[in-house]
Length: 468
Image 1: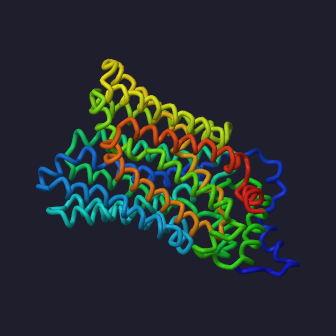
Image 2: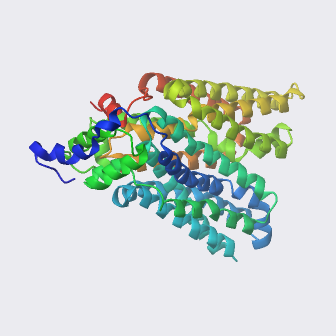
Image 3: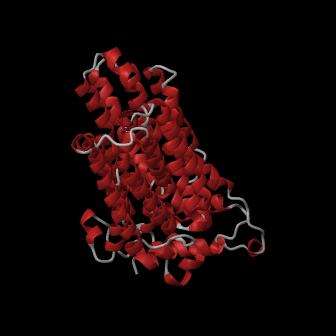
C-alpha cells in the first residue's frame, strides 16, 4: 500500500470523508450492500445447483451414456476434487484480482462446466464438466462469505453472511425438485442461470473497500465505501479504522502458508480450521448425500423423506438468518451442536432397534425424527456459522492464504465423510451415528473453550481480541 507522510497523509485520506452535514444526517438504508449481497449469493445458489445436480440426474445419465456404477461414482466424486482445487487457489486469486474478480473466475468455470455436461456424448466431457463446476463451487465457497463480511456493516454482517448458506440450501433443493421434472441436459442449462446473473451483476456493484485499501487504491476505496454506506452517510470513522488497520498490516511481511502457524495467528487458525473439521466430520455430507438410502434402510418412503429434508433445511436456515446478529455466533453453534448429538442418537436408536429386530413400527418413525432433528440443527448453526466466523476471524494480510486453506480442510472433510459413509454403514448402521454423535459432542466442548463471540464488532475489533 502506498504510504503518505505522517503529517498530512491522514488529511489526504480522511478529509474528503468528513462532511459536517453528514454527522447529523439520519442513517440511510444501505441498498447497495443488499444489491451486492444478492449478486454474491447468486454464486452460493450456483454452488447449491452443482451440489444438488447428481442425485436427480443419476439414473438418466447412466442410461443415456451407458455408464457403469464406477464411472458414475467417479463423475460424482470429481465435484469434490474440483472443489478442493478451487479452495486452494481461490484465496490467492481473490487477493490478486479482488473479490469481484475471483467471483468472475468462479462463474466462468461453472459456465464452462455446465456447457461441457450439456454437450457431453461420453465420459470424458462429462467428467471434465463436473471437475470445472466443482472448481467454481469450491472457489465460491471461499470468496462469497469473505466478500459479504468485508462490505457489510457490523450491525447485520452475520445475517447477510448467513444468506450464503441459505442460497446454497435453496440451490440444492431447487436442483433436486426441478431435476425430477426435466432431463439431465436441461437441468445443466438451468445451472447456467445463477452464473449469468452473477457475471452481469458484478458490473453493477463496488469492489470490497477493504481489499481496495489493502492494494493502496485510496480513491477507489473511499468511493466504494461511500457507495456501500450511502451518499449522506458519515464514513469517516469507519474509513479511518480500516486505513489504520491496513497500514499496520502493511508493515508485516507478505503471508505464506507456513506463516499461519506463527504464534500471532495460531488462535485464528485453530478456530477456523476447528469449526470446519467439526462441521464436516459430524457427518453432514454422508447424511446429505445418502439420505434416500438411510430412509430406505429404515423403511420410510425415500422420495417423501427427501422432499421433507430439502424443504426443512431451507426453512430453518432462512428463519435463522435474522437472529444471527441478535443471538450471536457462539450460542447458535452450541444449540446446533447439541441438536446434532440428539439427532444422531435418535437415528442410532432406530438402527439399533432394527439390527436387534425390536419395535418394528418405531424404526422408521425414529429414523425420520432423528434425521429431521439433525438437519434442522445443522441448518440452525453448524451449517452457516463456521463460514461466518471464518470470514471474520482472519487478519486481512493472511485472509487469502488462511481462508483458502480453511476451505480446503472443509472440502477434504466433505470428501472423507461422503467416501467412508457407506463403509461405516456396512460395518454398523447404529455405530456410524454414535461416532457422529461423539464428534458433535466434542464440537460443543471446542466451541465453549475456543470460539469467541464476534457479534456487534467490526472486523478490526475482532482482530484486536483474537490476535492481540
